[in-house]
Image 1 (cartoon, rainbow, N blue to C red):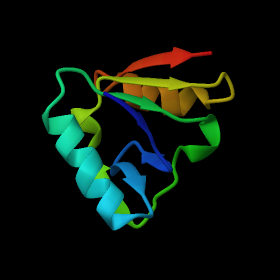
Image 2 (image 1 turned 30 degrees about the vertical axis):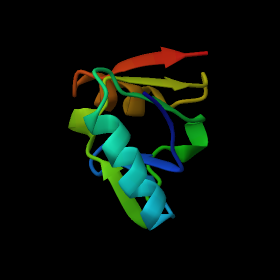
Image 3 (image 1 turned 90 degrees about the vertical axis):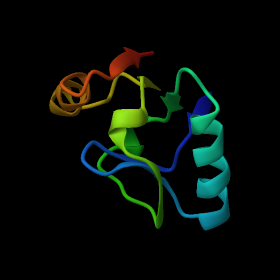
Image 4 (image 1 turned 135 degrees about the horizontal axis):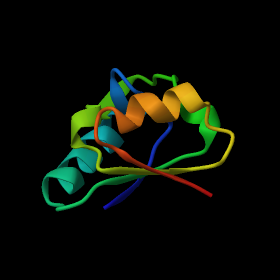
Length: 85
């Protein structure tokens, strides 16, 4: 599944401001073999109201090249593949 997220905190996980959307997204994650979070670099270290899943359930992140090196390193240390475009 490809998840467009509003926030991605490397400690908390991916988040959205919409509680109902978080429940639907969680169900999609449970039904998926691979979870890819898609978000621009401004979404990192940002938390919204409802957590979708913790970082341990994310396999890959696709984001832009403005992602800080320390954030990319934190994600990779959790075995999350980081793709910069």
